[in-house]
Amino acid sequence: MQLNSFDEWSPLREVVVGSAENYVSHERELSFDLFFHDNLVHDNAGHGESGRSEWYYPRLTARGGSSGRQRTPVARRYVDELNEDLEGLAEALRSLGVTVHRPLPLSPDTAEVTTPAWSASVVPPLNLRDNTLILGDEIIETSPMIRSRYFETQFLKPLFRDYFRDGARWSVMPRPMMTDASFDLSYARTATVGGPTEPIEDPQSSPWDVGLEMMFDAAQCLRLGNDIVANISTENHALGVTWLERHLEGRFRIHRVHELSDSHIDSMVLALRPGLLLVRSHEVADKLPEPLRRWDRIVAPTPQENNFPRYDSDALILTSPFIDLNVLSVDEETVLVNEASPELVRVLEDAKFTVVPVRHRHRRLFGGGFHCFTLDTVRDGGPEDYLS
Image (tube, rainbow, N blue to C red; front, side, top):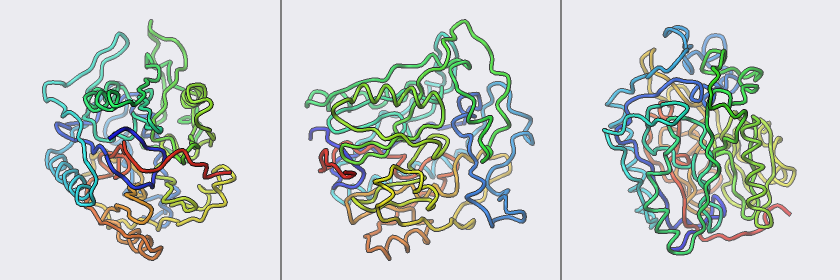
C-alpha cells in the first residue's frame, strides 16, 4: 500500500513495531541525561511517605556520580520479556487486520557508532516513533537527540525504500554534529520539575563545535490532519520546528506549544478521535492551542504503584508512571492499552471505547509505551481540517 498517515485515530492499515533484539545497556552521557531529564515529580503527589515518590527515580549520586560515559547494564531477563511483549503487541495488531512490519534487527556485533566528534553505544530500533515523522505521503527522518540513536533509522531503510518506490516522499532533517556545545542546557538547568540525573555541568569543548543545533524528535508532534502541534522546550527543538515550518509550508500548519514536557508529547496528550483528547491533566490540556482546548477530554487516572514491577535499586528508570497513557488507536473506537493499567482500561471502556488489553511489563526501563513502539505508515484518513 502507499504511505498515508495524517492523524492518530483513522483506521490503521500498516504499522511498524519496534525491536529490542540485543538491547544490553543504557549509556549515560550528556545527550542521554538531557533527553531523560524530567522525573515528573509532581505527577506522583500522594505516593511515598513525603509525596515525592522515591520509588520513581533513584538518585544517580548514590551510584557514583554522572560524569563521562557510563553503561548501565540491562538484565537479560527484562530484555527477553520485552521481546515477548513486543511479539504480543505485533500479534494483537495482526488479529485486528493490521499489516505489521518489523525493522532490521540490531546485530550483536554492532556495539558502537563513531563520528568525527564522539563515540556512543548503539541501541536497537525500539521506540520507532521518535526518529521518524510520517506526514501524509512523506517520511521525514528527524534530527536525533541521543547519540546512541544517531543512525537508528538505518534499521528501517528497506521499508522506507519500498514506500519510496510506491510514490512516497522521503526527506531527512539535517544531522547535528552533536558535540556538548550543540545542546541548549537551559531547560535542564532551570526546570522546576527536577530530573533523573544530577544537574548538567561542565560541557566539554570540541574542535567540531558549531553552536546550538536542531535536535527534534517526531514524538514531539501531535498529528491532526493538516495541523501539527509541536512541543518546544529548548532552542534545539525550536530550530527543528523552524525547519519543519519551512519544509512543510503550504501543506501543513504547525502550532507551537512550549514546555509541555522536556521533549515528547505522547505521554502528555493523545488525540483518540476528532473532538476527544486523552490528557495527563487539565493543566496539560490548558497549554494546548485554543481550538484543542475546546475538545472534550478524558483525564488519565493516577497510576498506582502496584501497576509496575519492582526493580533493584541500581536499575535506571526512564519514564514517568504515566507512560501507560501512551496508547495506540487502531480506529476511532478501538485502542490498545497496557493490561497492567486497569484504571485506564476502565476509564476508556466507560467512554465506550473497545479496549484491547496488551501486556507490556517493563515500559519504565525502556522508555516507551505502545505509541512509542510503533510507527503507523498507512491509515485511512486524509489532510482534514479539525481545528478551524
